[in-house]
Length: 125
Image 1 (cartoon, rainbow, N blue to C red):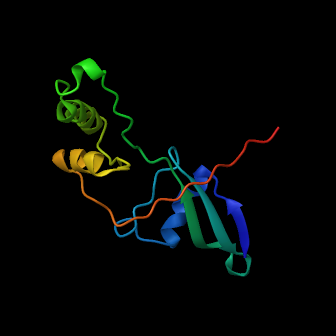
Image 2: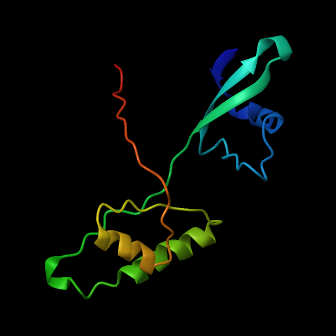
């Protein structure tokens, strides 16, 4: 196997691996892909791993004097209306506590069965 970053011009080669109707392939202008290729089979793509941005909505900051007056749901709707105008998409909210989880549910978000991990990669010189 040979492992390499996939050139954006080679993105159509991913269709050899998956059906985009069953596994959504992110577009090359918003994602990167590392692929495994089988050199004994004309460089056939045999695996792919994507790195892509995930939109997440946070933090929510409200001046203490206006607590109870700022309409969180209305703020969310404005973001969603803008996203719809730009073609749609999805976003996430990290809910560190029950209050934030409830706010996410109030605007129609769905709880996912994921555990979130984080890793920081330091930049080189």
